Length: 334
Image 1 (cartoon, rainbow, N blue to C red):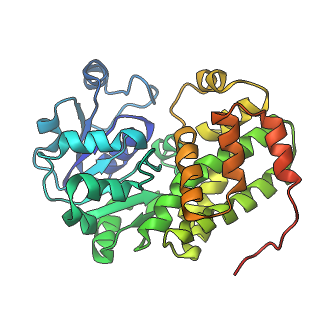
Image 2 (image 1 turned 120 degrees about the horizontal axis):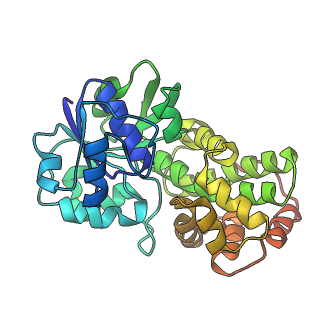
């Protein structure tokens, strides 16, 4: 991996591109918006994210697909999850046969596919063993600040995962490896839904006890859904599950937690989105997760409550209260 293309110039895509450049790779960051791309090339700063950071000299930006992919050894997809299919389709005939790293987190609406499943659906089954999923507790700003960060890199080909991990890991960034792609994908996607719920409890003025309960029961719900899709339950106890869940439910930089907090304060969804001003994947993922739970026959009360608030206009305070007064049950199910 000497030259890498990162598709998607949002906050996380920019942070990954900067990380790879610091690791000595030549990086081309593809951005859909040509005007924003031109500004970034001129100023060496992303005009919408991290204007206080001058980007590494090894990092260039382009809005041209051919330029982005020229001579690359790996491709990173870091777009919002709901446009991943479109971007993959646009690049399909140009993608070289190199490792594809998925840095987006979500479940596709309508099809209820994970992003690895979307890759196979768009590009074909031959891509499955060279597609890797990167997830874990990793706020983009803290990565830009070179703060120690640990993530998980999942691939059905463990040798490939170990090879890529060794190349992208460094003094402040570590990528652990696994073959449990499903567990890593669902942990990364569903934690955003739980963060909206935890944020709503905080916005209502409820305390740390409530938030801890929401996180813990949220982890149980994520694990049930992931296991029903074929994941290993211990994956959800690791960085892609518990680690990312805690970060997203408690961290000040969490967009999904901020959306939930605004809803808990009585804001409408539109008002909450306007307040946060950035894409919160959990909003769209809530719809997919709610439908996926129904398809798999999995009890997912937190997801159902968030769905009612976002898509049925239910009162956030009432929804949280109903969650906290559900009939008692045994904590662990074996």
